[in-house]
Image (cartoon, rainbow over all chains, first blue to last red; front, side, top):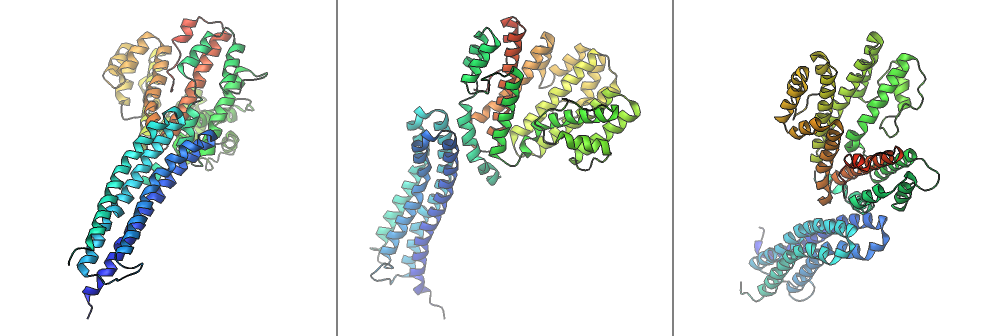
Length: 163
Length: 324
């Protein structure tokens, strides 16, 4: 007979994988989109490479956040060393804790990329407005950071729960 | 749709950079301030136009048109969204091919460059009476126009058939497109062409049958009502137009025909100006081509004015709104 109580580590690992996977997918799509726009601007004016490169990299942070959440989770659940004896409830909690970063990471990377592509267009026409152009996609970053925060707080607190 | 949105990111970014080189109102004023064509060409050369050396104004304008399309060809292999701009050239060349074959005259400098279909192909199709190599709608129109011209020897009827087929092709292309700007441009082009046909027909006293054959049905103008009004008088035509979204066209027509033509071009410019804020889709590419055509047309008006020593005021009232 299948023993559900042994599945805690599986769900916890699933959470870690999802955070890294979905954040990575979002960032890959985002950086790909901004990369196309940046290449378009540099084709016409190579002197703008530095400015558009920074804008291109903005949607890349969600992938890093996802990796961070994945790494912290792996450490907490004992996959990287220590005890990996996790109850089903804790496993599900780790999975739930990883979801904010996984989902918000993927969605925000895509939308941040759209804002960054628009900002690259702005820099193409008005290079002196580079500072302002950074702010628009950076606003989207707020929500990825909030998701990162809540995921980290949750993951680091689950271990001390007595369930 | 998602893919379509993201398909043009690279192209739009390049277009944004190129838009910096478009002529602004200040550049137009600078051109107007020049006394001679040669001075205008120097100013244009400084702006990156192919106007340096021993070139004629027509060569400069043709080179710029060619540069625009070369840029678009570089950006995308799929010219479908640009068909609405290429159809008028194609159908004009088709008219020339049909008339050349029927009258037995060897065509010389009658074809316009830059169409989607090679004029030589059209000529061969008409000569062989086999239109199948042409796109379907164009083949049907060519067949119809060719046999009508053979039977009636009426060149105007041949023009009417092909002009209407062109407008229908433009409308169909706009409607099939997922892009709002293409759909609106096609609709505006068709409506404006219908108004031009109705005004000319009214002034030359054409009958209802002619108008019904010439007017292409479009969404914002009822072809039957337009034909009925044009058969009565210019006042009736203006009154009908006043009750449509093209009420301002009637006002401009009362002013002068050139004021109406400027109004038409300015409406197109109003339509595409929003694309300056759009970083995705084919819209900005389409708007860029329109903007380039508009500035070439503006430069043509200025150079013609300078060549013919026209009064500055007369030239200025014909100058189009600029994209940037």
